[in-house]
Image (cartoon, rainbow over all chains, first blue to last red; front, side):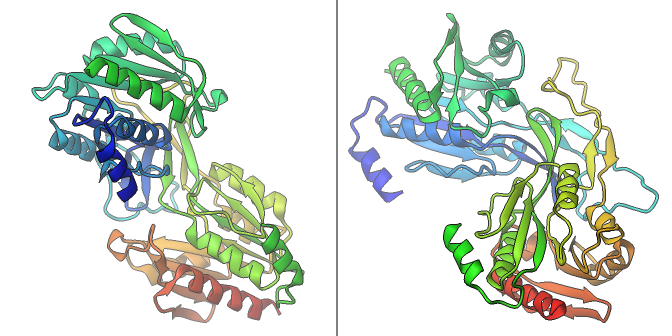
Length: 228
Length: 228
């Protein structure tokens, strides 16, 4: 972390002095003290994006759920567990020149989460979980008072990727959507490569299959181009 | 892995030639292609137990869910995701001289898991998840035809640890239960130490707070004493 900080401070990159927020990883929504609901996300793409932005001179705040990927070097790190905690951390970290919402945030949390472990009983009765929607972090920030000048969301889709992602961009009010196809057969989730489509006001721009670090470098370069 | 295998083959330990099955990690029960329900379990205790048994000369089959802990050196490794897959893998691995069921297996799976990502819709409608009980791996093996001579279960409890674990031993039909208190304030889940109580036909025997590797070594020694 010290080396990365030195690198960043010495860096005369195009993002020097710009504060950029990156969210990453899954969120975990508790059911009881030992069980939770999660989204599949290693956090690898988010870590790579934070490091690519840092390499261009940005001051990165990295808000992450419980991801298995290593934490990015050179970023200010904030660890959270749930979607509600992530929104609080994001709001506290603003203002920023740009925000990249890479985290796979759970859409729902369990409202009747227990403080004791739910026990199986002999009657075979099954648990009833009551759900409530989590705050929509991307939409909240995109439409909020402290909106960064550039807001980028991610869309993990299993079908009609471009149509769903284009609709998501309009609905959330963000500037760009980085869309990808997470059907298990693509191997993207948990893998080292990514194939994304960048959705902007100008339309859909498919990127080639790249390593997650090359995808990150390309996105960081686009952000730098936009902000400078 | 090669070094561990050499160590094992050179070992003239008390468990030489004994096949021992160890399960470890959480199971993940899919909700849809990107979401799942899980138990909190790093797999650290299971990996430590497998390595301690290998060090005493045992031939270990290690059946693990998606755990973040490193895989044990010197064991035959079988990776699974769900409880139903874990039971299949365990049954296929028998017979064994002993089985240590250390995995934090989900008690339920979602019967209406989707093959496409569940979308939030504008109406705010929330998902309904239907649950069914997972097979009880510990009870199935304890009461099955291929029952290993020594069957050891784990009990992760948040209250009345000894009472719950003693009842569990009787209900499941296993020989020993390794019980621990997983209330968040103990720091055991996700931590490096463990404080367990061994429940046998003779009663409850509290062990001191030990590192997970010392807990594993003590359990492996008890298994060796019992089997030889």
